[in-house]
Image (cartoon, rainbow, N blue to C red; front, side):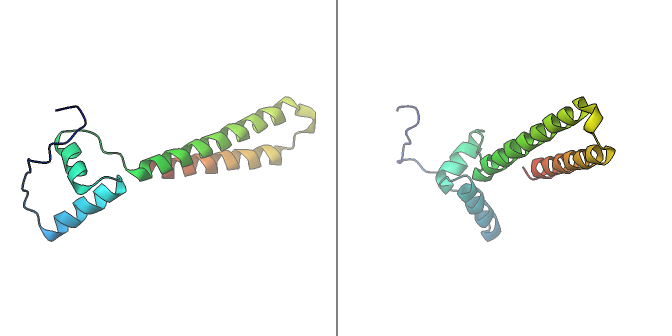
Length: 110
């Protein structure tokens, strides 16, 4: 049998409660897999990736880009010492802190 093909002649019976079945079906759906493919991957120790993981990763990349932009702006403000208001620096630092908090929240949701 070729790698990646499935022998549809063999099956495995698993007894589940209604609650367990709902959880497995939901998780398979989150990974864009059939229940059979999800159970096969899980049972063989292969990683199943949620479609949500990719969306969260993209959100984190966007937030990280925003943090880089804010850091660059702070560097520019500091290098132009004669025109810098302390309140501008404090405001920018607050935005950076808020962005870091957003990254922590997103990372915690994965």
